[in-house]
Length: 392
Ligand code: MTE
Image (cartoon, rainbow, N blue to C red):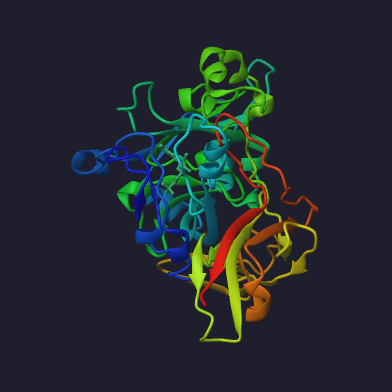
């Protein structure tokens, strides 16, 4: 793990070459971590009395113990890729240092999350109009109360959250084991296809409201401000942060080269060809439809092969004590990364200094040549490039 912010808080990613070492599902020790403050101590009496509280524009305030969540609702498991909106920020900071720290391209990981659908709980909590005003948002709050501006909180549209199709889970386990403290023990939200910042850890409260979250980090985080706004201006002028147009929800299409690493030297003698490998993902449940590689700075592109390990889960339909129901047979949303590879004869590689990759999703959104620099350094998805050297 590479620590990105010193000792505290713990924010870390693995080197991109090791990102797939655990395969499609990332084990906890390789899973990226992004926390704004210290991990709250949830143990002893606090853990024993842990409740998820529903409040706001609902029929009546209601709360669930962990046991009640596990027994009163259908337990389900879904493979979901989480991505920090700051993934690949380092490239933006090289152009001009923005407000955030240097994520490489490994601020992304995948796990089989186990929990219950938020949609199912909302059916019981029953959102309702108050004085003729419609409820529109679900606000999640974490237990990280030591943050200087109050606990981490953020929100999601109620219409999105109320639909099982979008797969939002209230989860207690990751890859069959209870969440690690770093990843939200004992309970977290997991919002597939959305920026990782919406997946609130150490979840203790959900409020149904007619407005977005007013938590400090809902306002001052997970936004792509216009490119003209530099870091100083962003710090000085708060109105940029209050404009809901700059809020980011769904992930944008992205891909990266994991092997070889940037500036790596490829041994020429061993094989007649070399295989580039990487990942791609899209947001909002959309599928990646193509990944292309260029050896000549985008003058020409060739299709890479894509592998969708998530589709193996679509062939399964079962129920067991650890995972509850795993049934994606009727689900066509894509919530996970896919892997791509591109084999190139060694003699072509010799001439190439720079390899670029770009992906396209099913809505035909694709990665652009130019970076959209922004002060928060978020959603960076220009072509991913590595320089490769060939030995000999
Ligand atoms: N939830 C709380 N309570 N506090 C946080 O700091 N960070 C968010 C989100 N949920 C955060 C949080 C961000 S920005 C991301 S990218 C994801 O958690 C990271 O989840 P992970 O650390 O499990 O990978």
